[in-house]
Amino acid sequence: MNTDQILTELDCKATRSGGPGGQHANKVASKVEVSFDIENSLGLTEDEKKLLLKNLDSKLTNNNFIILKCEETRSQHTNKEIVTQRLFSALEEGLVIPKKRKRTKPPKSSDHTRLEQKKQHSQKKELRKKPKL
Image (cartoon, rainbow, N blue to C red):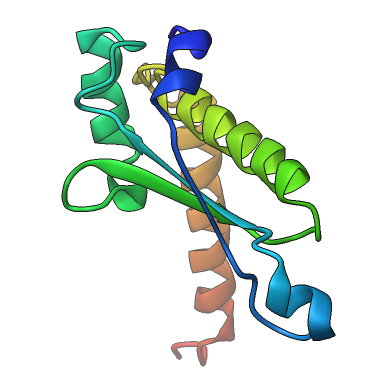
């Protein structure tokens, strides 16, 4: 993953933030929306693209764009830094290959203890019955 190339491919938009804030919020475009096209990126290899498309499927749009927004602070530059950090952490998270699970057999002692507990339970139930005369 070439981070410098990805930074040049980001599409950033600044819009007015919602919510309270008075005159400042009504004048300043501090909300930042970043979109990134995974399929047409030159900063990713083909294998990385396939892995990201598979792992980030729930976060992608129909056109395989990942779109992130930030309106936490009143500063557009700070919001842009926050949202780019979120994007890179999402990309790194999507590139992680999970380990394959190795099937193991349960130990023989677990079978033995299970059968012993079963015997004890049946004896307890047997003792509760009325004696036969």
